[in-house]
Image 1: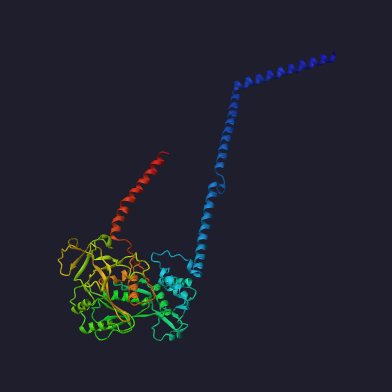
Image 2: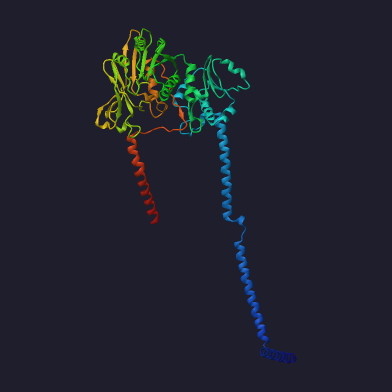
Length: 554
């Protein structure tokens, strides 16, 4: 019992002390409230709370900013951008390496190169390829300059060098040599009859060779009158080299006699004749000029050319032609006559033609059919239709047109002797030389006219032919060098046929450095013009509207 009593007393004492302390605290609190000390503490505590809240906000903001200020090098955009830069660099390096490899491969294997030029400056024509593949003898093309110097001297030489290597790619019997004349000065002694210059070619097979000069054979050089400078109009490298290979590997050479003495030798006429004879030379014809006023036509000439005489022949000259065509030889004899496109009084020539059943119209043909006009509205320049297949059998492509201008029609007087070669359209008219200035071809349409004809005489040993072609401009340089028209191929085939050549020859056009080919006729222009001017733009607008409307309603 004493234990409980003592505990009770101690407990009461503790409660009394606690109540005394609480009273004291309450008294102190009241005193503090009255004196404002508590309010100060309260403000201090509230201030601390606000400071803590501000710090929390600042810490939150700092965290947000730290999140925003992440390492830029670790960002997704940076990774994407880095990949794009690296990929671009890889592509650039790959292109450079590929370009180097392509150049190396092209130099080692020329046949793998691709010609992206418009004129096929780096490619052989199919005619050349076909001929070159048939060569079974060793042929050497000597370029008279070191290769590195040659290719760097001029872009035209570099193009020519690439083209040359295509010959070796087509036939390994053809070799290319590069001769440094400065280190081999005695080399030219092997060719004493040639005026050899650097950068020219010598094509040889055994002891037979052909020298090709830079400006006379390999390139056509033009002159700018305003600046006095020269420039390359066209590249003749392929035609010159192929014909040289033909020359050195063939024993079948045919002689042509060009009859001079009755022409004005104007620049344009001379240029056209020169282009024509160059074409013949490239097809292994030997061309010799003869002054008909003083010389007989050689007996070994298979064909003679009387080209646009601007004066009548003398009776003696006509006799020389008649004696030549009388043909007591074993081979065919032929005269190829091209009349002038101006009025010339020529009774002696007319008499010769009459004997062979032909005459020449006294005026120029105007063709009004637009489908025959290469140039819209030009009645005097037109294309011609072939007559039969007698002189077209050897053509590689007889779907291409013949073209001419200022045509003197060839009139057939004796159909038993004479055969037409080519004709104009049925909508043609003949404008006489004395017609008025207001002459309208549509009011004088007569039908078709002959552009050319051939008269044949059968001899005991061989035939003779007198061939007349009425358009001198059919031999215009642009027309003969054009791949659009068939003039060069046709006339070579015609000559091969009448001279009884066994081989078909090769016709290769020069490659123009400045002009483009005319590829469509007037009627085609009339059809295609509206299509490209109206139809295609309208269709483009309609398609664009349809796409826009569909996207708008998605």
